[in-house]
Image 1 (cartoon, rainbow, N blue to C red):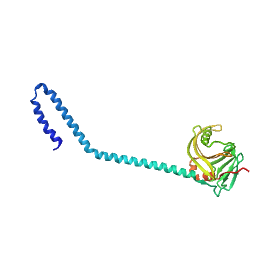
Image 2 (tube, rainbow, N blue to C red):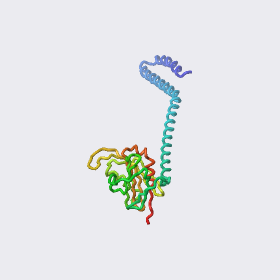
Image 3 (cartoon, one colour):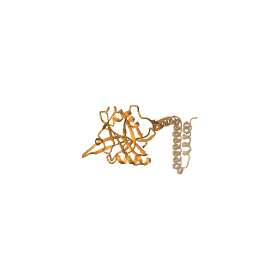
Image 4 (spheres, helix red, strand yellow):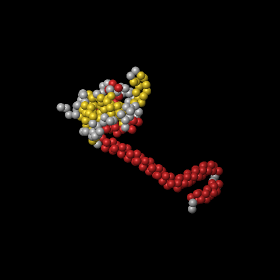
Amino acid sequence: MDMRLTWLLLIPWLAGALAQEPPEDIKALEQELKALQEQFLRQQQALEALKASPKENAEGQREALKRAIQELKEMLKAQQEELDKLRQSLAIHKRPPSATYPLKGKAVPYTLWVDPQRWGLIDTARVNPLAEYALAHRPSGGNIYAMVIAEAIEVPKDKLKSLVLEQFRQQLPDAHIQGEAKRLVDGAELLCLRIEGTLKQLGDVSLTLPATYFGCYYAGQPGTIQIVTYATNPKLFVQYQKDIGDLMDGFEITPER
């Protein structure tokens, strides 16, 4: 028999029984009956909830599984990106066949082989007076610049990144590293950094100009060497990514004679 029907049959019987109680106890018994009725309603609500719970639980499990699958996909994507970076860092890059023009180091014995069809020498004063060499990228109409700065100072490799960032912040107070990778070029390990910031001052002119730099840095024997590129439009880094990579791959440490 249905539980609800059982209780409904009991209620009239209880009411009749209560009518025979002494008057002084009627109020207390009415309260007890009310409490029993409330308990019955709670039991009914619990039963209805129990009947509905399998469906609700299944829906909750379904959503939980969807979230878990999405989180797993994101985790696998992040791991794949890290794996790609690791493969890139472990790959040994070689000088491209088109890089036939050598730029010989002055302060430090190195050679940067460049493709003369892609890069042309310009006055270092246009880019950085401290640079040994300055280059303009021909296919971009000279809108990508490169410079080589070399110092006969050995910087610890674990300090190189922080020193580079500190150097940039002298001109770009908000400079930050947007991308980082290691690059093995002809046996030399280079730290490659993409640095972004806002240029506030250009000579005597105050301005607000977004700036993006990509450079590869060598630290060790016989010194510290920076190969840094700058584009007037950051999108050019994407468009001419291969040319910039080939420029970095032309680097080699020249044995001292």
